[in-house]
Image (cartoon, rainbow, N blue to C red; front, side, top):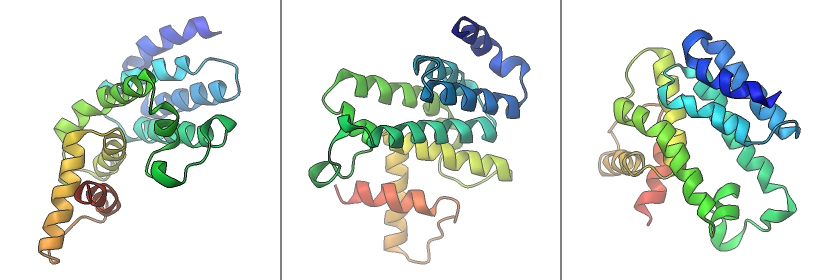
Length: 185
């Protein structure tokens, strides 16, 4: 069964509509979660996302990657998340002393980096473009994209300096979360 995954990966963004691409990502992560395929399958499949422009597959991918992190939190391997590690995601906590964390972070940044560079923090475009921007900014900031983190810090600082400064409701929670993390460091 898994021998067909590379073929699907090559054809994903070429012939499948956005809803099918989203379903394929969801199915691959579900099969990995159930132990039917290795997690390398959905991670390899999702590598096409660097060329993905549609909101629906990105929403699914960000949800699945986040879900994977939270599922990992509840295994015995991850220990206590209180104390000095409370700001780390479960996966960051698990991988903090390994080379894998750097590889995982690099993978996420390779997927979202080109999109961040073209989308930025300005809340413009169609409704789906705005929603997609939120997903991509969330993934970029979570992975430590320096431009994303700096954008959040800058937007928060502008608002702190001038409370009349407008932060789009679409971006507010990201600005508050990542901006405060950056400003407080």
